Image (tube, rainbow, N blue to C red):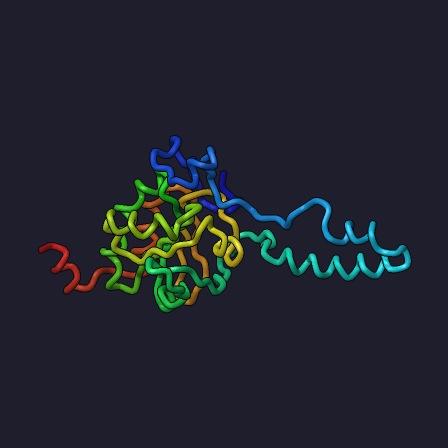
Length: 235
């Protein structure tokens, strides 16, 4: 299911490749889950029973503030940047585990950011086409950047990507946590964000039915091939 104003299509049949953590869960999630702060009785309630009545109000107020800080791991729900809005800063892991800011990969370029997962069959079907787009247009200031959001993406991802020979950068985000916190929660995988040279969102596509439209858009944005590139492409 897409979001108003976004391009979407159904994600297809149940995926054939499921990572180990997903199998242990017994379910196949369609998107990184939204995270909420823990619920239930907290320290303030326990202390309100034990503390003298005269201190109850003060302790409750103080511990409410403290528990708010402790729950800081939960991210507020946010939508993806809208069309024409700039994407925020985002730091994710490379294959070797070292962090890298996605801006260092996309600044000054037209970029197609592919948020995907190894268990998602449409995601896997799209990989060869995305690789072709990257090779075809990279000399004109274009790049594809993949963001893998499996539950244990940083463990299973690098070997998976290496075996498939994916020719563009892929970053790793376990369960899509950092992406969800910084850029927003996606409506499904794959989600493709087309981003202009200045970091503004041009298009968002959910699913793989719009890849022809993506390429048409790239041709409009990037112009014709140089004569040298066209000659190399025919060899």
